[in-house]
Image (cartoon, rainbow, N blue to C red; front, side, top):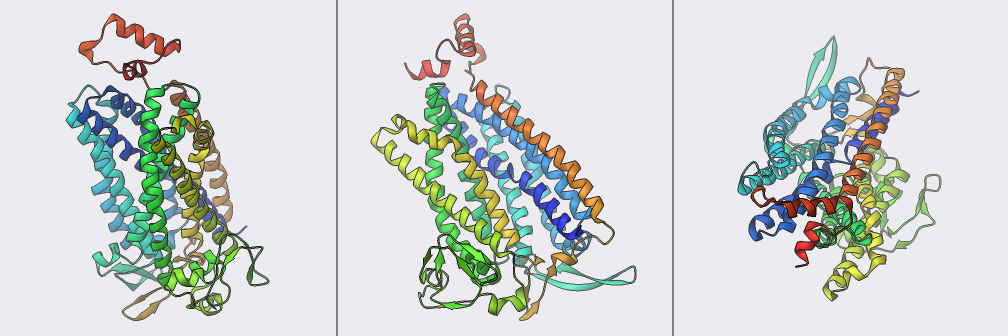
Length: 486
Protein backbone atom coordinates (compact mmCIF):
# COMPACT_ATOMS: atom_id res chain seq x y z
CA UNK A 1 0.00 0.00 0.00
CA UNK A 2 1.28 3.44 -0.97
CA UNK A 3 1.05 5.90 1.93
CA UNK A 4 0.95 8.89 -0.45
CA UNK A 5 -1.98 7.45 -2.40
CA UNK A 6 -3.86 6.57 0.80
CA UNK A 7 -3.26 10.04 2.29
CA UNK A 8 -4.51 11.65 -0.91
CA UNK A 9 -7.54 9.36 -0.97
CA UNK A 10 -8.41 10.17 2.64
CA UNK A 11 -8.17 13.89 2.07
CA UNK A 12 -10.24 13.62 -1.11
CA UNK A 13 -12.99 11.65 0.66
CA UNK A 14 -13.20 13.98 3.64
CA UNK A 15 -13.10 17.24 1.71
CA UNK A 16 -15.54 16.06 -0.96
CA UNK A 17 -18.02 15.05 1.75
CA UNK A 18 -17.46 18.36 3.54
CA UNK A 19 -17.84 20.30 0.30
CA UNK A 20 -21.45 19.17 -0.03
CA UNK A 21 -22.39 21.76 2.59
CA UNK A 22 -20.46 25.09 2.36
CA UNK A 23 -21.67 25.96 -1.17
CA UNK A 24 -25.23 25.08 -0.20
CA UNK A 25 -25.19 27.18 2.98
CA UNK A 26 -23.64 30.15 1.14
CA UNK A 27 -26.29 29.95 -1.56
CA UNK A 28 -29.15 29.48 0.90
CA UNK A 29 -27.98 32.32 3.14
CA UNK A 30 -28.41 34.78 0.27
CA UNK A 31 -31.93 33.46 -0.39
CA UNK A 32 -32.82 33.85 3.31
CA UNK A 33 -31.57 37.45 3.39
CA UNK A 34 -33.78 38.17 0.37
CA UNK A 35 -36.86 36.57 1.96
CA UNK A 36 -36.46 38.28 5.33
CA UNK A 37 -35.80 41.58 3.58
CA UNK A 38 -38.92 41.20 1.45
CA UNK A 39 -41.01 40.43 4.53
CA UNK A 40 -39.60 43.49 6.26
CA UNK A 41 -40.43 45.59 3.20
CA UNK A 42 -43.86 44.22 2.20
CA UNK A 43 -45.16 42.75 5.50
CA UNK A 44 -46.54 39.80 3.50
CA UNK A 45 -46.85 36.69 5.68
CA UNK A 46 -45.80 34.40 2.81
CA UNK A 47 -42.23 35.74 2.99
CA UNK A 48 -42.08 35.12 6.73
CA UNK A 49 -43.28 31.53 6.26
CA UNK A 50 -40.72 30.94 3.52
CA UNK A 51 -37.86 32.49 5.48
CA UNK A 52 -38.55 30.34 8.53
CA UNK A 53 -38.73 27.14 6.48
CA UNK A 54 -35.53 27.71 4.53
CA UNK A 55 -33.74 28.83 7.71
CA UNK A 56 -34.50 25.46 9.32
CA UNK A 57 -32.93 23.65 6.36
CA UNK A 58 -30.02 26.11 6.37
CA UNK A 59 -29.29 25.37 10.04
CA UNK A 60 -29.19 21.63 9.38
CA UNK A 61 -26.73 22.01 6.51
CA UNK A 62 -24.61 24.50 8.45
CA UNK A 63 -24.26 22.02 11.33
CA UNK A 64 -23.25 19.26 8.93
CA UNK A 65 -20.64 21.52 7.38
CA UNK A 66 -19.06 22.32 10.74
CA UNK A 67 -18.94 18.68 11.86
CA UNK A 68 -17.58 17.32 8.59
CA UNK A 69 -14.84 19.95 8.30
CA UNK A 70 -13.06 19.16 11.57
CA UNK A 71 -11.44 15.92 10.39
CA UNK A 72 -10.07 17.61 7.29
CA UNK A 73 -8.11 20.12 9.35
CA UNK A 74 -6.45 17.48 11.55
CA UNK A 75 -5.04 15.75 8.47
CA UNK A 76 -2.68 18.66 7.85
CA UNK A 77 -0.77 17.64 10.97
CA UNK A 78 -1.22 13.86 10.88
CA UNK A 79 -0.75 13.04 7.18
CA UNK A 80 0.82 16.15 5.65
CA UNK A 81 3.39 17.45 8.13
CA UNK A 82 6.02 18.36 5.50
CA UNK A 83 3.38 20.25 3.53
CA UNK A 84 2.19 22.03 6.69
CA UNK A 85 5.75 23.09 7.47
CA UNK A 86 6.16 24.40 3.90
CA UNK A 87 2.91 26.46 3.78
CA UNK A 88 2.51 27.22 7.49
CA UNK A 89 3.37 30.91 7.22
CA UNK A 90 0.95 31.42 4.33
CA UNK A 91 -1.89 29.32 5.71
CA UNK A 92 -1.44 30.69 9.21
CA UNK A 93 -2.23 34.24 8.13
CA UNK A 94 -5.09 33.27 5.80
CA UNK A 95 -6.79 30.93 8.26
CA UNK A 96 -6.32 33.37 11.13
CA UNK A 97 -8.06 36.02 9.03
CA UNK A 98 -10.83 33.50 8.29
CA UNK A 99 -11.35 32.92 12.00
CA UNK A 100 -11.34 36.63 12.89
CA UNK A 101 -13.34 38.05 9.99
CA UNK A 102 -15.60 35.14 9.14
CA UNK A 103 -16.10 32.39 11.69
CA UNK A 104 -16.87 34.60 14.69
CA UNK A 105 -19.13 36.82 12.59
CA UNK A 106 -21.03 33.87 11.12
CA UNK A 107 -21.34 31.78 14.27
CA UNK A 108 -21.98 34.80 16.50
CA UNK A 109 -25.16 35.77 14.67
CA UNK A 110 -26.30 32.28 13.68
CA UNK A 111 -28.17 31.79 16.96
CA UNK A 112 -29.98 35.10 16.47
CA UNK A 113 -31.00 34.03 12.96
CA UNK A 114 -32.17 30.53 13.93
CA UNK A 115 -33.72 31.23 17.36
CA UNK A 116 -34.44 34.95 17.20
CA UNK A 117 -37.86 34.77 15.56
CA UNK A 118 -40.28 36.90 17.60
CA UNK A 119 -37.50 37.46 20.18
CA UNK A 120 -35.64 40.29 18.47
CA UNK A 121 -37.01 43.07 16.30
CA UNK A 122 -37.56 42.32 12.58
CA UNK A 123 -34.80 44.76 11.66
CA UNK A 124 -32.34 43.12 14.02
CA UNK A 125 -33.30 39.72 12.65
CA UNK A 126 -32.61 40.96 9.12
CA UNK A 127 -29.22 42.29 10.26
CA UNK A 128 -28.41 38.89 11.79
CA UNK A 129 -29.34 37.11 8.54
CA UNK A 130 -27.21 39.54 6.53
CA UNK A 131 -24.20 39.09 8.83
CA UNK A 132 -24.48 35.29 8.74
CA UNK A 133 -24.48 35.43 4.93
CA UNK A 134 -21.58 37.90 5.00
CA UNK A 135 -19.66 35.64 7.38
CA UNK A 136 -20.07 32.68 5.06
CA UNK A 137 -18.86 34.72 2.11
CA UNK A 138 -15.88 36.02 4.13
CA UNK A 139 -15.04 32.44 5.08
CA UNK A 140 -15.06 31.39 1.44
CA UNK A 141 -12.74 34.29 0.62
CA UNK A 142 -9.94 33.23 2.96
CA UNK A 143 -10.26 29.51 2.24
CA UNK A 144 -10.15 30.25 -1.49
CA UNK A 145 -7.15 32.58 -0.99
CA UNK A 146 -5.25 29.78 0.76
CA UNK A 147 -6.14 27.23 -1.90
CA UNK A 148 -5.48 29.63 -4.77
CA UNK A 149 -2.02 30.37 -3.40
CA UNK A 150 -1.21 26.67 -3.80
CA UNK A 151 -2.37 26.88 -7.42
CA UNK A 152 -0.57 30.13 -8.33
CA UNK A 153 1.89 31.06 -5.53
CA UNK A 154 2.89 34.72 -5.20
CA UNK A 155 4.26 37.17 -2.65
CA UNK A 156 6.61 34.75 -0.89
CA UNK A 157 10.19 33.56 -0.65
CA UNK A 158 11.61 30.15 0.23
CA UNK A 159 13.85 30.07 3.30
CA UNK A 160 15.79 27.00 4.48
CA UNK A 161 15.26 25.77 8.05
CA UNK A 162 17.11 23.02 9.87
CA UNK A 163 14.97 20.48 11.75
CA UNK A 164 16.68 17.53 13.48
CA UNK A 165 19.71 17.92 11.29
CA UNK A 166 17.70 18.05 8.05
CA UNK A 167 17.21 21.10 5.86
CA UNK A 168 13.61 21.96 4.98
CA UNK A 169 12.28 24.89 3.01
CA UNK A 170 9.47 27.08 4.24
CA UNK A 171 7.44 29.57 2.20
CA UNK A 172 7.45 32.90 4.03
CA UNK A 173 5.28 35.83 3.03
CA UNK A 174 7.11 38.86 1.67
CA UNK A 175 4.06 40.65 0.26
CA UNK A 176 0.72 39.96 1.97
CA UNK A 177 -1.31 41.77 -0.70
CA UNK A 178 0.38 39.80 -3.49
CA UNK A 179 -0.25 36.59 -1.57
CA UNK A 180 -3.95 37.38 -1.14
CA UNK A 181 -4.45 38.63 -4.70
CA UNK A 182 -2.36 35.92 -6.34
CA UNK A 183 -3.09 35.38 -10.05
CA UNK A 184 -5.94 32.90 -9.53
CA UNK A 185 -7.72 34.27 -6.43
CA UNK A 186 -10.32 36.53 -8.01
CA UNK A 187 -11.23 34.18 -10.86
CA UNK A 188 -11.55 31.18 -8.59
CA UNK A 189 -13.41 33.11 -5.89
CA UNK A 190 -16.05 34.38 -8.30
CA UNK A 191 -16.37 30.88 -9.76
CA UNK A 192 -16.90 29.39 -6.28
CA UNK A 193 -19.48 32.01 -5.33
CA UNK A 194 -21.50 31.59 -8.51
CA UNK A 195 -21.42 27.81 -8.10
CA UNK A 196 -22.74 28.22 -4.55
CA UNK A 197 -25.53 30.57 -5.65
CA UNK A 198 -26.59 28.16 -8.41
CA UNK A 199 -26.67 25.27 -5.94
CA UNK A 200 -28.75 27.30 -3.47
CA UNK A 201 -31.19 28.21 -6.25
CA UNK A 202 -31.48 24.59 -7.42
CA UNK A 203 -32.06 23.42 -3.85
CA UNK A 204 -34.97 25.86 -3.48
CA UNK A 205 -36.49 25.09 -6.88
CA UNK A 206 -36.13 21.33 -6.36
CA UNK A 207 -38.10 21.26 -3.11
CA UNK A 208 -40.61 23.82 -4.36
CA UNK A 209 -41.20 21.80 -7.55
CA UNK A 210 -41.81 18.68 -5.46
CA UNK A 211 -44.43 20.52 -3.39
CA UNK A 212 -46.13 21.82 -6.54
CA UNK A 213 -46.24 18.39 -8.17
CA UNK A 214 -47.89 16.96 -5.05
CA UNK A 215 -50.24 19.91 -4.56
CA UNK A 216 -48.80 20.86 -1.17
CA UNK A 217 -48.09 24.36 0.15
CA UNK A 218 -48.83 25.73 -3.29
CA UNK A 219 -48.65 29.46 -2.55
CA UNK A 220 -45.40 29.07 -0.65
CA UNK A 221 -43.91 26.79 -3.32
CA UNK A 222 -44.83 29.11 -6.19
CA UNK A 223 -43.24 32.12 -4.51
CA UNK A 224 -40.12 30.16 -3.58
CA UNK A 225 -39.79 28.58 -7.02
CA UNK A 226 -39.97 31.89 -8.85
CA UNK A 227 -37.36 33.44 -6.54
CA UNK A 228 -35.05 30.43 -6.95
CA UNK A 229 -35.55 30.48 -10.71
CA UNK A 230 -34.53 34.15 -10.87
CA UNK A 231 -31.32 33.45 -8.93
CA UNK A 232 -30.63 30.30 -10.95
CA UNK A 233 -31.05 31.98 -14.33
CA UNK A 234 -28.87 34.97 -13.52
CA UNK A 235 -26.01 32.98 -12.02
CA UNK A 236 -26.12 30.15 -14.57
CA UNK A 237 -25.51 32.71 -17.30
CA UNK A 238 -22.87 34.45 -15.17
CA UNK A 239 -21.06 31.14 -14.64
CA UNK A 240 -20.51 30.85 -18.39
CA UNK A 241 -18.52 34.11 -18.36
CA UNK A 242 -16.74 33.20 -15.13
CA UNK A 243 -15.81 29.79 -16.50
CA UNK A 244 -14.21 31.33 -19.59
CA UNK A 245 -12.23 33.80 -17.48
CA UNK A 246 -11.12 31.00 -15.15
CA UNK A 247 -9.99 28.81 -18.06
CA UNK A 248 -8.00 31.71 -19.53
CA UNK A 249 -6.25 32.16 -16.18
CA UNK A 250 -5.43 28.43 -16.08
CA UNK A 251 -4.04 28.61 -19.62
CA UNK A 252 -1.63 31.36 -18.56
CA UNK A 253 -0.55 30.17 -15.12
CA UNK A 254 -1.19 26.39 -15.11
CA UNK A 255 -0.71 25.33 -18.74
CA UNK A 256 -0.25 21.64 -17.87
CA UNK A 257 -3.65 21.64 -16.15
CA UNK A 258 -5.24 23.10 -19.29
CA UNK A 259 -3.54 20.42 -21.39
CA UNK A 260 -5.06 17.77 -19.12
CA UNK A 261 -8.49 19.43 -19.19
CA UNK A 262 -8.48 19.34 -23.00
CA UNK A 263 -6.46 16.16 -23.60
CA UNK A 264 -3.75 18.07 -25.44
CA UNK A 265 -0.81 15.66 -25.61
CA UNK A 266 1.05 17.57 -28.33
CA UNK A 267 1.24 21.29 -29.03
CA UNK A 268 -1.07 22.31 -31.84
CA UNK A 269 -1.82 25.33 -33.96
CA UNK A 270 -5.53 25.70 -34.40
CA UNK A 271 -6.11 23.37 -31.43
CA UNK A 272 -9.54 21.78 -31.26
CA UNK A 273 -11.97 22.01 -28.36
CA UNK A 274 -13.57 18.66 -27.54
CA UNK A 275 -17.21 18.48 -26.51
CA UNK A 276 -16.57 14.96 -25.24
CA UNK A 277 -14.03 12.20 -25.76
CA UNK A 278 -11.83 9.51 -24.26
CA UNK A 279 -8.16 10.41 -23.68
CA UNK A 280 -5.88 7.61 -24.86
CA UNK A 281 -2.52 7.75 -23.07
CA UNK A 282 -0.83 5.19 -25.32
CA UNK A 283 -1.88 6.87 -28.55
CA UNK A 284 -1.41 10.37 -27.13
CA UNK A 285 -4.74 11.67 -28.40
CA UNK A 286 -8.42 11.92 -27.58
CA UNK A 287 -10.36 9.00 -29.04
CA UNK A 288 -14.08 8.83 -29.83
CA UNK A 289 -14.38 12.57 -29.39
CA UNK A 290 -16.31 15.39 -31.01
CA UNK A 291 -13.85 18.24 -31.70
CA UNK A 292 -14.55 21.81 -32.74
CA UNK A 293 -11.50 22.71 -34.88
CA UNK A 294 -9.62 25.82 -33.76
CA UNK A 295 -12.01 26.56 -30.90
CA UNK A 296 -9.45 26.01 -28.12
CA UNK A 297 -6.92 28.33 -29.79
CA UNK A 298 -9.64 30.93 -30.23
CA UNK A 299 -10.76 30.77 -26.58
CA UNK A 300 -7.22 30.79 -25.16
CA UNK A 301 -5.47 33.25 -27.47
CA UNK A 302 -8.28 34.93 -29.40
CA UNK A 303 -6.78 33.56 -32.62
CA UNK A 304 -8.11 30.43 -34.30
CA UNK A 305 -4.64 29.61 -35.68
CA UNK A 306 -2.62 30.24 -32.49
CA UNK A 307 -0.55 27.49 -30.92
CA UNK A 308 -1.66 25.92 -27.63
CA UNK A 309 1.09 24.10 -25.75
CA UNK A 310 0.73 20.39 -25.03
CA UNK A 311 2.63 17.98 -22.83
CA UNK A 312 5.48 17.70 -25.34
CA UNK A 313 6.52 21.23 -24.27
CA UNK A 314 5.18 21.25 -20.70
CA UNK A 315 5.83 17.88 -19.11
CA UNK A 316 9.55 18.36 -18.42
CA UNK A 317 8.90 21.43 -16.26
CA UNK A 318 5.38 20.84 -14.91
CA UNK A 319 4.88 17.09 -15.07
CA UNK A 320 1.70 15.44 -16.32
CA UNK A 321 -1.50 15.35 -14.25
CA UNK A 322 -3.88 12.36 -14.49
CA UNK A 323 -5.30 13.27 -17.90
CA UNK A 324 -8.32 10.98 -18.12
CA UNK A 325 -9.82 11.99 -14.76
CA UNK A 326 -9.12 15.71 -15.25
CA UNK A 327 -10.54 15.65 -18.80
CA UNK A 328 -13.75 13.83 -17.87
CA UNK A 329 -14.37 15.84 -14.67
CA UNK A 330 -13.90 19.11 -16.56
CA UNK A 331 -16.22 18.17 -19.41
CA UNK A 332 -18.89 16.84 -17.08
CA UNK A 333 -18.72 20.07 -15.06
CA UNK A 334 -19.12 22.15 -18.22
CA UNK A 335 -21.98 19.91 -19.33
CA UNK A 336 -23.77 20.49 -16.02
CA UNK A 337 -23.30 24.24 -16.39
CA UNK A 338 -24.77 24.26 -19.90
CA UNK A 339 -27.68 22.13 -18.71
CA UNK A 340 -28.44 24.68 -15.96
CA UNK A 341 -28.48 27.48 -18.53
CA UNK A 342 -30.90 25.65 -20.82
CA UNK A 343 -33.13 24.51 -17.94
CA UNK A 344 -33.46 27.92 -16.32
CA UNK A 345 -33.94 29.75 -19.61
CA UNK A 346 -36.71 27.34 -20.67
CA UNK A 347 -38.41 27.74 -17.29
CA UNK A 348 -38.03 31.52 -17.49
CA UNK A 349 -39.67 31.50 -20.92
CA UNK A 350 -42.70 29.62 -19.60
CA UNK A 351 -42.84 31.94 -16.59
CA UNK A 352 -42.86 34.92 -18.97
CA UNK A 353 -45.70 33.25 -20.85
CA UNK A 354 -47.58 32.71 -17.58
CA UNK A 355 -47.70 28.92 -18.03
CA UNK A 356 -44.73 27.80 -15.94
CA UNK A 357 -46.69 25.85 -13.35
CA UNK A 358 -48.68 24.04 -16.02
CA UNK A 359 -45.48 22.37 -17.30
CA UNK A 360 -45.40 19.35 -14.99
CA UNK A 361 -42.70 17.69 -17.12
CA UNK A 362 -40.46 20.68 -16.48
CA UNK A 363 -41.13 20.64 -12.74
CA UNK A 364 -40.17 16.96 -12.67
CA UNK A 365 -36.80 17.86 -14.22
CA UNK A 366 -36.20 20.47 -11.52
CA UNK A 367 -36.74 17.97 -8.68
CA UNK A 368 -33.54 15.92 -9.29
CA UNK A 369 -31.61 18.82 -10.89
CA UNK A 370 -30.18 19.76 -7.50
CA UNK A 371 -28.13 16.54 -7.61
CA UNK A 372 -26.33 17.91 -10.66
CA UNK A 373 -25.76 21.12 -8.69
CA UNK A 374 -23.90 19.16 -6.02
CA UNK A 375 -22.08 17.18 -8.70
CA UNK A 376 -20.92 20.29 -10.58
CA UNK A 377 -19.36 21.76 -7.42
CA UNK A 378 -17.60 18.48 -6.61
CA UNK A 379 -16.33 18.13 -10.17
CA UNK A 380 -14.94 21.66 -10.02
CA UNK A 381 -12.91 20.65 -6.98
CA UNK A 382 -11.64 17.52 -8.76
CA UNK A 383 -10.50 19.54 -11.77
CA UNK A 384 -8.73 22.10 -9.58
CA UNK A 385 -6.93 19.58 -7.35
CA UNK A 386 -6.24 16.65 -9.65
CA UNK A 387 -5.28 19.00 -12.48
CA UNK A 388 -2.40 20.53 -10.51
CA UNK A 389 -0.67 17.20 -9.87
CA UNK A 390 2.06 16.14 -9.38
CA UNK A 391 2.38 19.36 -7.36
CA UNK A 392 0.70 20.13 -4.06
CA UNK A 393 2.15 23.66 -4.33
CA UNK A 394 2.39 24.55 -8.01
CA UNK A 395 5.58 25.92 -9.61
CA UNK A 396 5.79 29.69 -9.99
CA UNK A 397 8.07 32.49 -11.11
CA UNK A 398 9.36 34.75 -8.32
CA UNK A 399 11.48 37.76 -9.31
CA UNK A 400 12.01 36.24 -12.77
CA UNK A 401 13.29 33.02 -11.19
CA UNK A 402 11.48 29.70 -11.64
CA UNK A 403 10.48 28.19 -8.26
CA UNK A 404 9.57 24.49 -8.61
CA UNK A 405 7.09 24.31 -5.74
CA UNK A 406 6.40 21.25 -3.59
CA UNK A 407 5.57 17.84 -5.03
CA UNK A 408 2.72 15.88 -3.50
CA UNK A 409 4.94 12.83 -3.06
CA UNK A 410 7.34 14.90 -0.91
CA UNK A 411 4.64 16.48 1.28
CA UNK A 412 3.48 13.47 3.33
CA UNK A 413 4.40 13.09 7.00
CA UNK A 414 7.60 11.13 7.47
CA UNK A 415 6.39 9.12 10.45
CA UNK A 416 2.95 8.04 9.22
CA UNK A 417 2.60 4.54 7.75
CA UNK A 418 0.10 3.17 5.27
CA UNK A 419 -1.69 0.95 7.80
CA UNK A 420 -2.47 3.91 10.05
CA UNK A 421 -3.91 5.93 7.19
CA UNK A 422 -5.98 2.98 5.95
CA UNK A 423 -7.40 2.37 9.43
CA UNK A 424 -8.41 6.01 9.76
CA UNK A 425 -9.99 5.95 6.28
CA UNK A 426 -12.16 2.99 7.27
CA UNK A 427 -13.07 4.53 10.62
CA UNK A 428 -13.95 7.97 9.38
CA UNK A 429 -15.56 6.49 6.28
CA UNK A 430 -18.03 4.65 8.51
CA UNK A 431 -18.72 7.80 10.54
CA UNK A 432 -19.26 9.88 7.41
CA UNK A 433 -21.60 7.25 5.99
CA UNK A 434 -23.71 7.46 9.15
CA UNK A 435 -23.65 11.27 9.00
CA UNK A 436 -24.79 11.17 5.39
CA UNK A 437 -27.70 8.86 6.23
CA UNK A 438 -28.63 11.09 9.17
CA UNK A 439 -28.48 14.19 6.95
CA UNK A 440 -30.75 12.63 4.33
CA UNK A 441 -33.19 11.44 7.01
CA UNK A 442 -33.43 14.83 8.74
CA UNK A 443 -33.60 16.69 5.45
CA UNK A 444 -36.42 14.47 4.23
CA UNK A 445 -38.23 14.82 7.57
CA UNK A 446 -38.13 18.61 7.42
CA UNK A 447 -39.21 18.65 3.78
CA UNK A 448 -42.10 16.27 4.44
CA UNK A 449 -43.12 18.40 7.40
CA UNK A 450 -43.12 21.50 5.20
CA UNK A 451 -43.48 25.15 6.13
CA UNK A 452 -45.54 25.99 9.16
CA UNK A 453 -48.10 28.79 9.40
CA UNK A 454 -46.96 31.73 11.46
CA UNK A 455 -49.16 33.82 13.76
CA UNK A 456 -48.07 36.90 15.65
CA UNK A 457 -48.48 36.26 19.39
CA UNK A 458 -51.07 39.00 19.70
CA UNK A 459 -53.16 37.51 16.92
CA UNK A 460 -53.34 33.95 18.22
CA UNK A 461 -56.97 32.88 18.44
CA UNK A 462 -59.05 29.71 18.58
CA UNK A 463 -59.56 29.99 14.83
CA UNK A 464 -55.82 30.17 14.25
CA UNK A 465 -55.28 27.04 16.35
CA UNK A 466 -57.88 25.23 14.24
CA UNK A 467 -56.15 26.40 11.07
CA UNK A 468 -52.83 25.12 12.36
CA UNK A 469 -54.40 21.78 13.28
CA UNK A 470 -55.88 21.40 9.82
CA UNK A 471 -52.47 22.20 8.32
CA UNK A 472 -50.83 19.51 10.45
CA UNK A 473 -53.32 16.81 9.50
CA UNK A 474 -53.37 17.79 5.83
CA UNK A 475 -57.20 17.89 5.57
CA UNK A 476 -57.32 21.52 4.45
CA UNK A 477 -55.06 24.06 2.78
CA UNK A 478 -52.35 25.63 4.86
CA UNK A 479 -52.78 28.99 6.50
CA UNK A 480 -50.34 30.45 4.03
CA UNK A 481 -52.28 29.24 1.02
CA UNK A 482 -55.63 30.37 2.41
CA UNK A 483 -54.25 33.85 3.09
CA UNK A 484 -52.68 34.04 -0.36
CA UNK A 485 -55.95 32.93 -1.94
CA UNK A 486 -57.97 35.68 -0.43
